[in-house]
Amino acid sequence: MITSYAQNFEDVILWRALKSVEHGFYIDIGAQDPVEDSVSLSFYERGWRGVHVEPTAAYAAKIRDARPDEEVIEAAIGTGTGLLTLHEFPGTGLSTGDPAIAEQHVEAGFEMKEIPVPLVSLQDLLDRHAEREVHWLKIDVEGMESAVIESWGSSAVRPWIVVVESTLPLSTEKSHDEWQPHLKGLGYEFVYFDGLNRFYVSEEHPELKDSFGPGPNHFDQFVFPASSTSDMLAPMRQELAVRQVSVEERDAEIARLHQHIADADATVMKQLADKQAAIEERDTEISRLVSNALENSGTISNLKRDMSAEKLRTHEWWLRSETLQTQIEELYRSRSWKLMGPYRRTGRMLKRVIAGVSLRGLKSERDSLAIFTIRFVMQRPRLKALLSEQLRRYPTLFNRFRDFTIAKIVSDNRSRNTFFGFQNSSKSYSRRSGSNHDVDERILRSSDANRILLDLEQSLKKRREI
Image 1 (cartoon, helix red, strand yellow):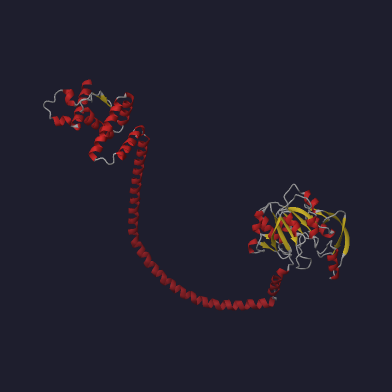
Image 2 (image 1 turned 90 degrees about the horizontal axis):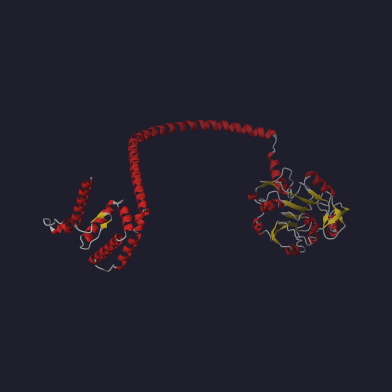
């Protein structure tokens, strides 16, 4: 929330665009009073500081007293050098260096006196502060705006926003056609006209243009100072005068209101009695509902208990699933799974290749590939020992391999030394024992029978070793 002191809310519009800047800097040409109609005071109260150009001695002294930490230049801005004759109209804010405008004020009845003041160019003023950012520049010089802007010269300083009074003094007639082309040539774009001033934004800061458009409004969050004499507050002052009635009139109104309150009390008491009866009826209904709720509480408790048990069972199943998932992940990370990867991929490839072959042919091809693989491993002792060690960790898988080997290889007439750690497993039990005369040949050809006989033989061998 800011306090607006400016004549036409110039400070409100500038603050909307620059409120994100902390401890900014401004140049106010034609500053006049440090409080009344001041464009800079709102910014000064927010920690900003700047330079004031005021050729009138009385106003310059007031600014120095009110703003001892700011620079005050008691001079006029324009082209040329030396002294300028200032036509001063004390206490009006109409002082000007333009003789034609001064003559109009004299004809209108204003008292004038002429004083010589130093003349400084805007170029010199801007170059003094070339090392810092100038966030806004205001020019209000009563008809001398063209001379001020023309004196900008070759200065490279570009204030972010320039505000120029753009109507003739005491008139709504626009006067910007003479100086606006020069300002645009300096890289400024017109963005807003408030009926008195024109606002321009430097091409170096196009992000500020979106802040202009609507006039001062509720969302700008500003207030007037208590000392404001703005005509806009006239309705408020009239309203305040209307409300300042005499004490007697107010006392009479208060007495009337007391009587009205007494009558209202009687009515309220009757209404309270009726309400009390209604409350008692509602209390009876509430008691009945509470009784029903208590009867239902047992059912609710049972449902809650069942729900808790169901949640517990759900959690147990979740824990089981987590355990199974962990086991699956361990299997995927195991060395055997990785070693068997090529064989799995080979199997999948073969399935796609022989998809059109009959089931019997597919089984035969698969068995042939498995026999080839097992014999390949058995010919390599290190690989055989490694796979044997890994397969023994998974008894079910190991038994499947062993059964397959017994059925397909051990029963074969071709000799092999071992299979994954089983001695003399290349020959069937009947061939090794030599005592198959009393055993049915079909039993000896069975992989299950051979596995059982091998297990018995291994067990007997271990017992003899003990």
